[in-house]
Amino acid sequence: METREPASHLERILRAGKFAVTSEVGPPKNAEASVIHKKAKPLRDVSDAANITDNQTAIVRMSSIAAATMAIQDGFEPVIQVTCRDRNRISIQSDLLGAYALGVRNVLCLTGDHMRWGNHPEARKVYDLDSINLIGMVRAMDAGKFQNGEEIKPAPRFFVGGVENPFAPPYEFRPFRLKKKMEAGAQFIQTQMIFNVERFKEFMKVVVDLGLHEKMYILAGVGPLKSPGMARYMRDSVAGMEVSAKWVERMEKTPKEKWKDEGMNVCVEIINEMREIPGIAGVHIMSIEWEEAVPTIVERAGLLPRPKASELATPQPVAVAA
Amino acid sequence: MKWFEFGPIAWARDYLNTHPRAEKFLDVIGLPAEAVIKKTLFGCQSCGQCLLHENGYTCPMRCPKTSRNGPCGGVRANGHCEVYPERWCVWYRAYNRSKSLPMPQSWREDMYRVHPPVNWELINTSSLLNELTGRAHGVKATKPEEKKKEAAPKPAAKA
Image 1 (tube, each protein chain N blue to C red):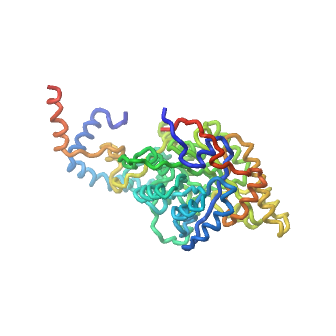
Image 2 (tube, chains in turn brown, cyan):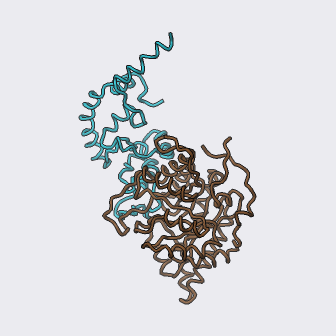
Image 3 (cartoon, each protein chain N blue to C red):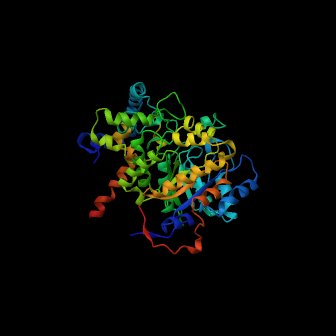
């Protein structure tokens, strides 16, 4: 039986059985390094790691690996997002070797938003791999093999994650797609932002029946609402998102000066519901361009203080999926 | 064991793998015929490694993200595509068709296994021929000289 040390702080926390908290930082649409330092600062002490997005919604931004390097300089662990939209398998593997050399240990594999709704709709798409093949490729690199089978020595060691959206049809197929990700080698999963707890519970029931939560750590995606307008927009216009009527009504009943406070309360309530669901190993807080909300949410949810690396006992070695 | 490893089919496969000119000749005839039929019926994109039968007769290469392993997270609530809201999501249709259309059980189950990434070397070649020669499953064509070289040392080793 093969054993391995945790590749990252996030993996160490999850293996120790602690409820993990990850957050998200969007790199700026310019070359200003101070933006990353400023955004990462409120998140550092309240979350275990932060996702650094890779040109999300197909809008050109600073490279996720460059921004992740800056987060590491601030003593903060990044999770780099890698999308298949802009790079083929050669380029992705080369970038990952570089990212590892710069200290990146967590990789989140996504297919990536299509450029049609981004700011360069005339760009050529790549999509050489899809997210499941990408997870397989990164895990193969972790095991010392390039995608073509050639050996990497020494091999980069990553904690590899994927994403899943339980709120997009065909709903019955979603848990089985998650199973495919498990078979490809995903070690953790972050879900789409949850505003429909009932649907998510149904999804998790099938996931637990399939036994996927024992092979991967599933982090529930949550986020604060800023205004009733944002809730309605997410309900009506964002593909693959569902917002329950009760949250929209609640935001609409709130006076304008209390919108942000109420939005954070909604997020805290959803986090508390997530902690009751079997198979959930943590939460991923997506505060879209509103990083200041995260410390308040984590504090109100009673998830402080976050465990320090020195506090965690050396975890027992566990078997690794082939 | 794959269907193409039996009797005369296996012989034809070996013949084609050792005779690249015969194979090329078949490719010239086979590709347009296959392309016309599959393009008309299924909107084939000529990837050379057909997944139609495993996907409820729906071509996954028509997906704007060419996703061969399942629907992306952006499928709209009505089952339409995130990128082109007027079109159906390829995978939404594939999932429903694989449940309703007549096909062997093994094809339905194939939807639930992980498919390897597209081999772009096979793009614009005949998928049927690739299936027959085994190239769709990673078999590399061997030239006749190489085959002779491989066969030669074997008797020597026995002696």
